[in-house]
Length: 256
Length: 256
Image (cartoon, rainbow over all chains, first blue to last red; front, side, top):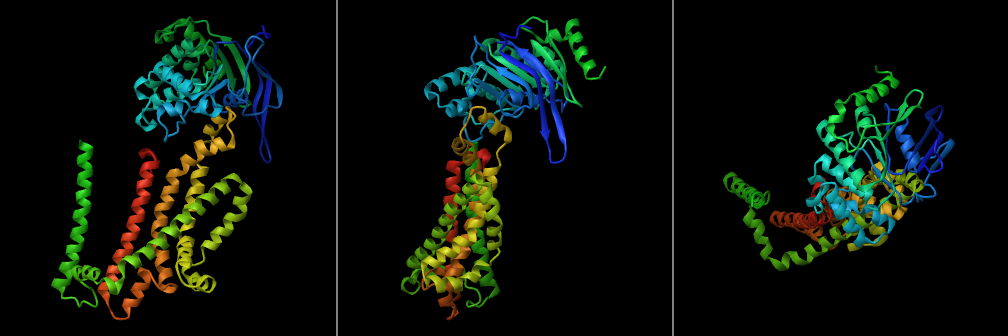
């Protein structure tokens, strides 16, 4: 493993939630690296600890054992301003216009607001919301709100984007569309993305690498590169290689 | 255009329904031959407005407005202020909230005679009675609104190292505004009731005091007019609250 230059290194990470009487093993033995510019999908059933791993990466959760390191000599990492997050819910502030929502991280970080607004406008163009800067969130559809949330995650130009089932609440068609959009945004922005999903097809379609986690007990089951060329279109889903990858994951999750 | 027409229709309906109510009142008195000391006709009632010296309408209405507005806005300041304090300190909340709920069980009307002993007659005790009767709904709804923040949104801003103050001013407080206003709307009605009760028992001026005075001479028309004026004061305060809500809360977030 070329661990010296990896942007993210997770090594034997373990996390236990302590309840009043019992302990609950949320994550065990998670080990994988992420290179700069990769789009890594963490896939697994509910309760497999994928969200927990994401929150550990975000610095929101501590972990018991193992090491987590983000940033390398060539790519420094400032945890306060190099993380952009997208959740299943858009979590837009409903009293703010779209553009004011997008600049929220810049506001919190105390960045130059004039530049932030410029950047926000540019990002709204990129996510396909050019005409909606002055709209309120309730005037947008679910998919559009999620696009705004993606723009918000990018506005402070973070190096790492963490996504927790960002399209999980969308209908199937919108979800496919957003997958294509995300690949485009990823290639245009060049960001490193860690993407959590329980959609097996989604994971293979998006990821340059897929990490498979299983539940009960939570542990890491697989970690492989997806050797399908970008830019990817929906037609790759019918390819033999795509089927091979999804079968591999189904098998690990005991669903063959 | 359609929006304007809809609004117009609404206003016409409001005015027509109020006029119809007055007409029905007049018809009932005329056709039913009701004795004027039992129930005065609208015209008789409105005629009392002309007897300026006897009723001192302007002065009495000003006094009552002062108690209602004073008690109400004091309740807004104290209610919202306490809720903010409670949201900052779990300890304060747990220690004081049960006490406040118990104190709220005291029938505020029963405090009137005690307030007279403490503060003598006049505006002060009336403001206090109005305040004490209407501040709890504001406190409770505000506290609920401040607590109603999606935990993932907190996660999102925590990754940006948002300060507590930033979370409060950018997320909690604006998010609580719709709740604050719904509490205020309930409080308007209570503040009017509180101020009038105060004037019944502990005042030498104001519309409540006026009612007690003219009751002795069975001047039902005067009493009715006083009730109408009290209602007008309440409507006036309610309109101000609605107007403020319209200015401060995005239409989607307003609570009915």
